[in-house]
Length: 212
Ligand SMILES: *Cc1c(COP(=O)(O)O)cnc(C)c1O
Image 1 (cartoon, rainbow, N blue to C red):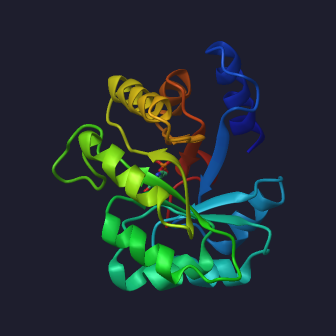
Image 2 (cartoon, rainbow, N blue to C red):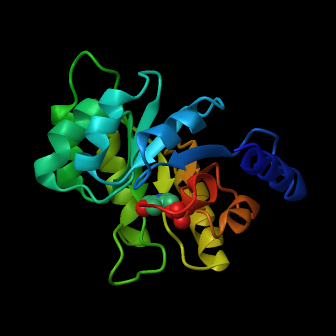
């Protein structure tokens, strides 16, 4: 944990990013409660999970000041529980799903933070929407009062795609869509992501070790 935070700080400096501009999301899928708790005790508060069934018992068992991010594919029969138990959903790639999350977000909770997941390399097997469709989905999400659009998320396959995603992010901001989160970079490629403007890296194995 210490190591990872110093690496992030070193890359911020190396690539002329403001200090503290890259947040760490600890991806705890496939990790047991004890390991998550030990990372929590180092001060980490943002954790990410991919599967609802796996996440619910963890959310119930772990401290309630954790900020939970859902980062896996969202099936429509899971939206209610996701809207009830998570603070963020980074994997929104479909308006019907966004509408369900909006409608099912409990009234006593603040709006649900969302990112639009982009299939930046147009890979047929990957989740996310095509880059040219992002503007319309973003505009539609802005009309949903129980959602708060925060940014873009992607799993780019090469460094040039990090750059493309950052350009898309900037062009949305220039078109008046205010975003503060560019979620890109994982265990094997977070240096390149930081170099290209990531504001949130999602790290599993490099933090927790191999998954179960
Ligand atoms: C699993 C996962 C991660 C973390 O992957 P590591 O390679 O373990 O760092 C990040 N983002 C998403 C969307 C994931 O599914």
